[in-house]
Length: 271
Image 1 (cartoon, rainbow, N blue to C red):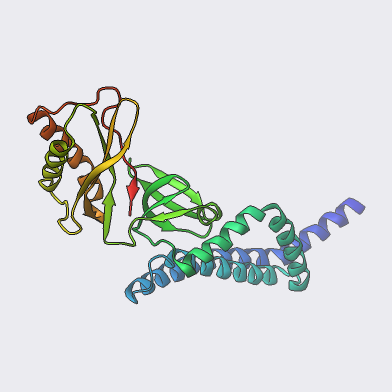
Image 2 (image 1 turned 30 degrees about the horizontal axis):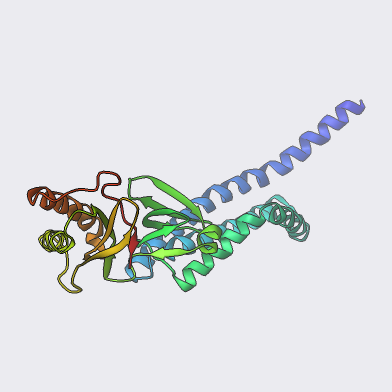
């Protein structure tokens, strides 16, 4: 008899509670659909308004999170959960999650700093934590970089701003740093003129500032020369490789002696 009465009570409660559950599910599904459309509309509106493309993903994510939190509160109220108790539970859970995700919160704060002070923007060629490439997106927690060898690198924002940031897109013109070595027996004025002529004939090398060739150091076996052409930022790598190619061809055609012990060395990027 007791079991029957308990079953009757459970059934009665289920019948009374079922409409609330169904209504909550309907509101949840419709709410998520509406939120997705709002976020999509917001993204299109920001793009048409010409809002900085660096900040669009951040704002879309932030608006989406806030709207979903509001939706959860609404669904909880429909089900019958007291919002005051629900807020207390969420606050406690948020505190625990925050303690566990201190690094992520630091990355979030760093992302805000990047969006405010803009040490780099979407499309810039940068070097972050020894990862060189073009910035694809500045997200809430990470910066997405497409490296020069066509790989995707995800750099946490906290790491990005904690080290040296080299932004190669802030200037229109970059100096391309190259090195060539010649033996002591090679006549330097001849070598300088041959290399300089080859540099000047390289496509996309700028005439102003003028390219420069000089002696950097004397080592135990040969003379190390610096070769310094200038190029527009977008032409940097074309000039880098084409200059080496033209210098090698010019040295060969002029029967110049080559420092076989060390050969041609790769240079570093210089501004």
